[in-house]
Amino acid sequence: MSAARIVRVAGALIEARPLLGALYELALVGTHRLLGEIVRQSGDTATIQVYEETSGLALGEPVEAMGTALAAQLGPGLLGSVLDGTGRPLARLAEVGGDFIGAGLAASTLDPSRKWTFEPALEVGATVEGGDILGTVEETEGLTHAILVPPNVKGTLASITAGSFTVEDQVGALKDGTPLHLAHRWPIRVPRPIAQRLATNRPFVTGQRVFDLLFPVAEGGACAVPGGFGTGKTIIEQSLARFADADIIVFVGCGERGNEMTDVLTEFPALVDPRTGRPVMDRSVLIVNTSNMPVAAREASIYLGVTVAEYYRDQGRRVALMIDSTSRWAEALREMGARLQEMPGEEGYPTYLASRLSLFFERAGYARARGKPDREGAVTIIGAVSPPGGDFSEPVTQAALRVTGALWALDASLAQQRHYPAVDWDTSFSLYANQVAGWFAEAAGADWDELRRYLVALLQRERELRDIASLVGPDALEDEDRFVMNIAWIVRDVILRQSAFQPDDARSPVDKTYAMASAAVLAGQKGREALASGIPTARLDLERVRQALVALRDAPGPDVADRSRDARNAALAVAGGISP
Image (cartoon, rainbow, N blue to C red; front, side, top):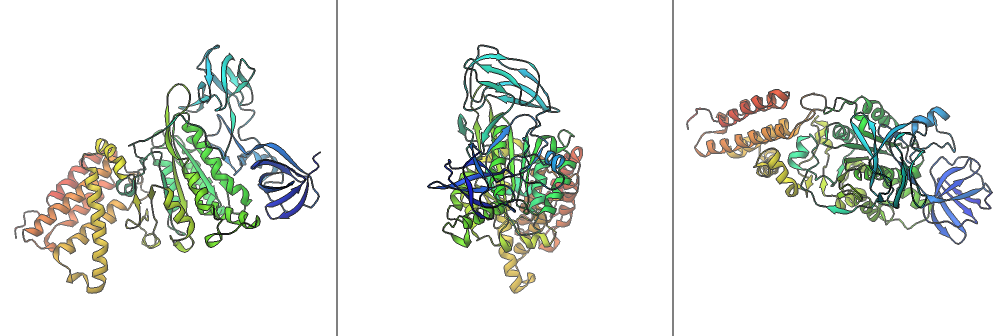
């Protein structure tokens, strides 16, 4: 038995002595053997953050270092699972301990009893190295899971066997005796190695018009989504999980309210993938660490999520990692920092908040995976932020802004008007717009970027005019300015507003988004021409344009082409046969 004993308990932090361990080495704490992680070493005293509830711990209880870091078990069976912040499957914990997680309960991430049919891709005598594909199993219907050689393994294949195996069975071995399994472990705080980081012009297509059209994100990019309570962050992330053009979804519920995560766990399995007709859970991994669960595990949960995402990226998949929310993760850092008696920074957050956040978001990217055969994959990170009172000047939002390439800022006033997604087009931005413009031009229309620029300028001008109209009244505005406000209202009300509950509007394909934008821009151009010829604003037929755009917005797939022509004709005829 270890000679180390608990000498101090401070919430989720304990100190043990004499104990010498490496930074981030795991330890088993107390008689219940609670899982913890060494976060500081001072002489022979180790400070450990415990991933479980520490109530009842007493001084003098034993502590044992495990000699390994917290690692994710990666292999077939991840998809469809619901894990806690340290990778334990909640369903199996419930089978063992009931609805409440008991002290010291442990379960492997992957089901050790489930068997998978393994088909080798290599033969005996082949030279392998980390990242090579050994073979495949069918993880879910229609989704092939590549079994990878662990990143730190290299040698000559001495044996490999086809058949039915569990994740703990040996499917092959190297000549030096190294065993090969369907699964392997990787430390969550260490980025998985890649062959090369690549640039890409492919966007992360969301199916949400306001994002794809105005504030696109490149595949492998990072985006911050700040918004106060009730602005629709969770609905946006559910819509992305269902409709975004990604092969794999990893959703991390980090420190959110238990009832909100209950809704996610209830609704997520009911979502249907429109591309396959199968449940979205078949290609999803949920990592749940609610606000009443131990705070230390909350800090680890986002690293577990990005490690799972990198694993599927290494298989050549396009992965979307969604975190709700990074603010709760930062609050966990603040609490742990206070217990460690570290010097606080702004608003009590640790001084290393920005660097930790930047190191995490740097794990997003489009990359060529190591090993053979050649394959490319991407991890796109969408991180929700919950600023207190909707104040975007607070430290977490500002730190996220410095390291992400896009901002989808959510506005409480728009949410109160039932305008969803409640995206503030004045505050939001994207640094990826020029990078992905060529892809959209090929997929939808050559003038895609021109449409985007026109609409951004239109909305900016409309905001200025609204401020003026609030002072002098709309009737005091010039005809052209009133026309700008009218056409901008149509853009806001029909194009930028989207219903998650209307089947034909919940997802907007790129061609439909382009058709709606081009019709609105054409109406704006024709209206300006009419105004220049002397026709007053009141005589322009914008209502017909609006109705045509609404019909296009709500059109099912087979009717989009016809409704697009109707919308374009309405835009061309905005001035009708009226003469000045």
